[in-house]
Image (cartoon, rainbow, N blue to C red; front, side, top):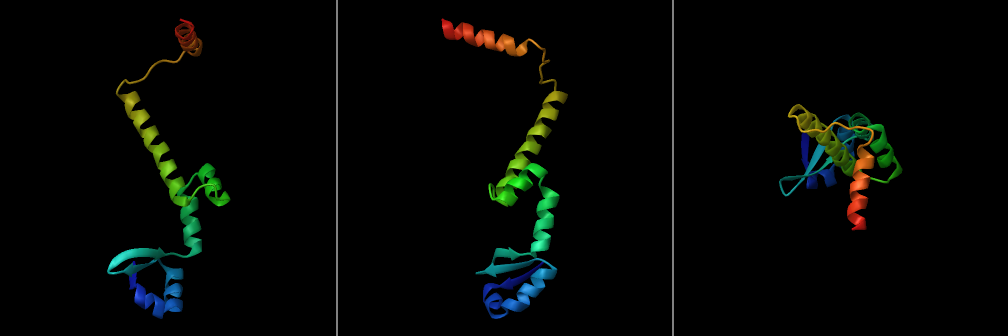
Amino acid sequence: MEKVASGEFKKDFGKVLQEAYRKPVTITRHGRDFVTLVSSQDFFAIQNEILGEYYLEKVQSGAMSFLEAVRAEKKIINDIIQARQDYDDGKYFEYHAGYSADIKQKFLSKAIH
C-alpha cells in the first residue's frame, strides 16, 4: 500500500486521488498512518463482502456506521463459535416443550410469596 505524507497530499491532491482510485493510499501525519483513501467502488464492495444483509441495510440507511455493523456482526459470529464450543464441551441443556411453562411457574411462585 502506498503511503503519502499529509504535506504531499495537500500539494498533489489530484494525483493522490487518482492513485487512490486504483489502489488504497494511506495518508500519514507526523510519520504515522492517519487516514486511508480507497475508491468508493472498492469501499462498497468491501461492505457487501463483509456484512450480511441485515447489517448492510442498517449501514445503507444510516442507522449504523460501517464500523458499528462490522463489530456487531463479529460479536454474533464469536457468539456462534462459543456456542459450538460449549456444545462440543457438553455445556448445553435439552429443550422440551414444557420448559418455558416450568420457568414461568417457578418465577410466579417466587413472586407470589
